[in-house]
Length: 356
Image (tube, rainbow, N blue to C red; front, side, top):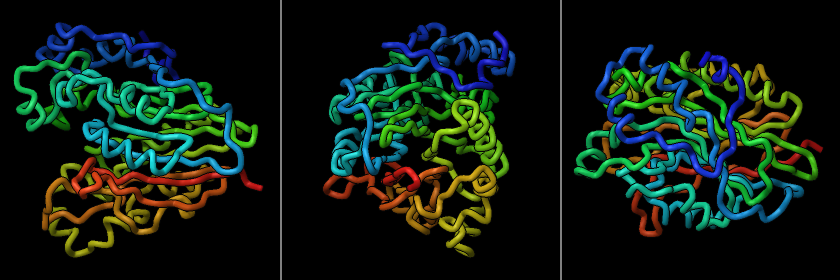
């Protein structure tokens, strides 16, 4: 198969993603890590071109006046109870969620987005970012013991109480640098991506997109992924108002981040005042997007699992809009009621409406 399928919005709606047999996943994990092997696997796995659609039926065709959205990197969705409670309290019409497991040993081999969907009473569209060839990072592998992943899917989703039309998967790259070990000891097939679709607001379609940019990266690379995403979104629908939100990983640094604690202490404001250091904001502005009314200024969106005096929390999650008004931006705490951490990202809340 040619590479052309990655250059356009894609995604065949299915009731369940096509499984990749464990034997094949193990063979890819243990086999050669060259780009040709990665590309052959990438282009031949149907799940990377599918969108699983499920959950309760829509509660309404569209919304009127203001559309309420929650945006969250839910970190595997391992702490589903706490995050479901936070999301329920926000009463969103749309949720744009990233880092969700399906059939991963580290999250009990459950179908986490389907479980959350039922809990919230929202339908979902779920796409695969990576086929995980092992059971996660070192700690996750140790915790899983001898338990294999039943499916190995890890991806992003749009959840909606409204009718979600034209669900689409936007592939941002097919570099293979998680497959060959350059970025981590977590072998994977796939690449960073965004999930989107359209809903009706006051009878007119708007495009909503949840994105996850590369973490093991640098500002120029992140800007390149944003450029790709904007081109794909315009190819999808250049006329409709659009909201793009998610985990942009705007650390302001290049990976690996050697020397960062010292630099952070010398200029702690840099971690939340990221715009001067991340060229993706200039690209967004050139393409007509605003972020100034969509985000809480200088509020960090990272959360640590344990205190770390060498870490300064950064602002890495964002909402951008084009052709929409925005109000009421808020940061939602990623905690249980008792204060225990439920994700390494805080959530975002925003309301949008058509420009009068």
